[in-house]
Image (cartoon, rainbow, N blue to C red; front, side, top):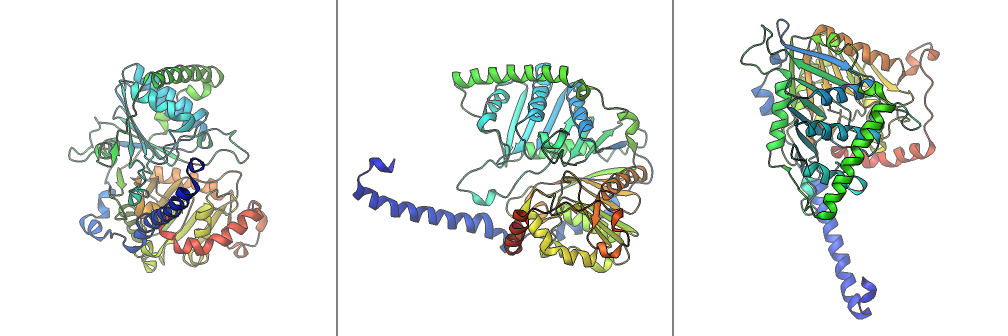
Length: 490
């Protein structure tokens, strides 16, 4: 373009463009980055207005819950729920990745919509990935009369203070009767065992169901599925969520029709080639465990630095625990503003164990740098830090409090989940469910190594450490100072 302009005019324009780009860069740095380090909201008003007693029940209620760890079972669960939906499907996801899992998932939603099910899809406005080769899918969704989709905080180049207000929830609610909360996004790496060299990412779902006829259900307390549905509704109708419909011309209408036919064909082929994924999950009814209470906690819907409601709840429960607190998170990066909510003395007599990824298997290099910078301090506070050294990486987020309270959902132990993103966790009061989660975490610990290996006499009892590539070791070392300066964004 500039080659068509005379040299004299070019000499006049180019400096102005450079100044404009520089000013825009400064504008983004100030309002999209450093503004988040200046002021971080407090959760104190929230804590003063709530108490932890609401998480506990005195007898079995109407809610039931089951853990799903296996990736293939997670596929069967989702496809079965979509196939069996009668009236409505509400879907909220942080991101999706092109591939077989996304194709089958959206083809199943379209099939459900074709038989009259009302489908609502809410995705993050920046990381939805419905562009490029997947842009035709937007046309297909937009043109279907039974499907609505919205983006939470769509990207706009002139509002960088919105860029960090990301939707991080992973929710599925079907017919208002059964719900799934998870750490899994939609992509092959979360579901297909054959994915890549390192294999499927290790994650975890919680399935919850509410028996509306159960005699012990309190009439003034919503069941777990209702809580999930109400939260989805709040996000769906919030001004931060936008339709962002595209203009549909004849070319796009043809592209939508072609994509719809291709998805239907892909679904039929998948049913023939992989019938095991379309079978009903084995013994799901028997695996649903009665619990005394399930409560959904979430961050407020705010721009800028959020009040850290979820983090405040988790730290309050940790400090009230009598015997143990187990933590599993792909990243553990407690910043100073986070630590303000945690009284180390309150945990002095509590067994604190942390399970996270080793530097070798963690794919998020900036997060690894943040964790490695703080690992020595964490080691001084925890009874044990277990770093996973298996073939894949951990992505599930969960906590155990004593022997009867659990938390599972989308929340990572970092400042981004605490202060920036939408996050949801289910707080589950039930001894049997707590034991199931303990068994799940213990199986992962069996594939992990303690940070302080010199505290153990038999090193052969642990799996061999995964080698840390030289490029990754160098990147971590270089990024550690930057991670310290920008830890509020990790």
